[in-house]
Length: 426
Image (cartoon, rainbow, N blue to C red; front, top):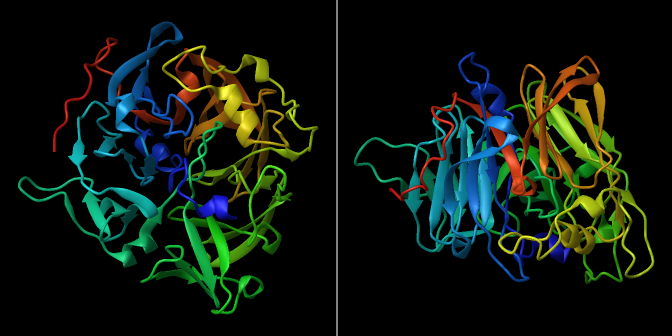
């Protein structure tokens, strides 16, 4: 469990993508697809990687819209308010992506940025869209502000009640999810820090005495749904090592439907270990799980997941990280068959997307059932019809696609040519 709360090479909150992209992409004139590529800082060399936004170009190519970070600037965290704004944080400031104007340059310079243990996008009724982060004191960065008004100011712990989090990004470079605690019958956050805010009350079966709190991982937090995984006692309070991999399978998720105020329990066909994060995301009413199976293998042999030979190896592109090695090191004893499990939380439909490739992930699901997903170096667009996925179409194939983990539909691109790299503006 120590791995779950350490800062290490993972980053608090990251984040996930977007039920809000459905809202941002529903208009008839919003025809372009935008893709965000970013890999958090790693402990192995090269340690830092650039972060960029692309648009879909002709002949299935990526068109660079702009580069947020150079490699030396250390991309550290991603947040999404699920209502049209995304935030990319580094050691020098935060870039804000406005989905209704993806070419807009918006950079807020920061000092003393710290993403542990509070980094979250905030959105709600009567709440100004913003992102909150830790520092010497909690700070808030407004998504927009009238001319002359400061974008950076004191934050408010109570605003975490309005936290928005889509879930764990796909690929091998997982980011730290929001952590909370169960104290008595209350779910509170941030983890192990006071003061704390009560997010909601939990079912009696989850309740814990205030003296012995339970650790809860927030899998997703949207306007409608709150999804929790309560870490089993067997996976806490001891050292973590590759020789002592605790695991849980199936993944037991507690889901609150905020509209009805009812809790239910889902058992997802996937495994999690104490060195991985639960691979769960919510897009609108769709919950997506990356299927993983606990399959211990002899030391040094790996799990033998399909498609490893198609993944980018370290050194094949000196500027970007090795995908194959990270799966091998981070997903030890997990077999990843290339199967994405979709479940509609509103009407109960279940859909399986069989990719037969380990490195595959869902990027976005729109309210009308349009989806974007990635398989290795390729991105596809398709349609959910009843309980099937139909008309998959290749829309991008590029050496930089494995670094894409977030996407949205936005205004039609004005040009098929790359836009110059972003100038920093405050």
